Image 1 (cartoon, rainbow, N blue to C red):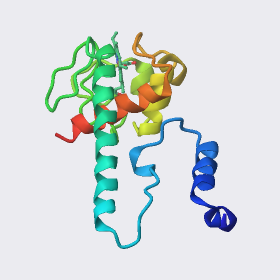
Image 2 (tube, rainbow, N blue to C red):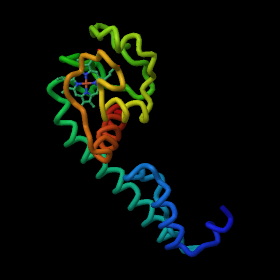
Image 3 (tube, rainbow, N blue to C red):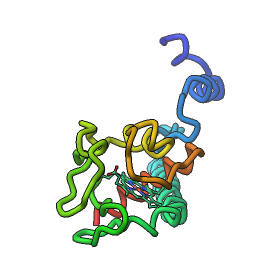
Image 4 (cartoon, rainbow, N blue to C red):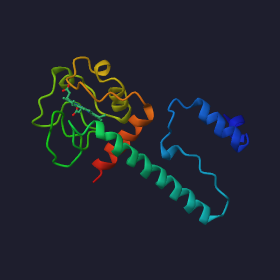
Length: 157
Ligand code: HEC
C-alpha cells in the first residue's frame, strides 16, 4: 500500500478506479486534490462534492418514478401497494405498521442497509424469494445508487 500512496496522483486514481467494485463511487469517496494552504481550493472542492451529491439525489428522484405507483417516501405518508419507504435505511424489513407484508418479507431477517437495498432492488425475488413486490427491479447499478441516495435524502426531512 505504501508504494501506491507514493505513486503520482494519476496512477493513484487509476489504481482506485480499477479496484473499486462499485462503478459509481459515492461522493464522499471522491479524491479531492488539495493545494497546500489554499482555503479557496478547499472550499471549491467541497462545493463540487456537494454539487455531485445533489445531482445524485436529483437523478434518484427522477428514477424513483418507477416506484411511485406503489411507494411514497414521506414522514407519516400512506402505504400504497407497497409500504411507505420513509426512513427505510436502518429499519428492519417488513416492519411498517399497518402494511400487510408477505411472509417471506416479514420473516426475512433483513435490516435495510444501503447494501441490502441495493441487492434487493437488483433482483427482489432473488433476494427475498416469495416477495410480493412484483416490479421495481433495477438492473443499472448507478440507478440503484441514485435511488438509494434519494430515499436517504428524502428520509432526512
Ligand atoms: C408494483 C408495485 C411496486 C413497485 C413498482 C415497487 N414496489 Fe417496492 N414493494 C412493493 C410491495 C408489495 C412490497 C412488499 C413486499 C413484500 O411484503 O414481500 C414492497 C417492498 C419494498 C421494500 C421493503 C420495505 C420494507 O418495509 O421492508 C423496499 C425497500 C422497496 N419495496 C423499494 C422499492 C423501490 C425503491 C422501488 C422502485 C425502484 C419499488 N420498491 C417499486 C411494491 C412495489
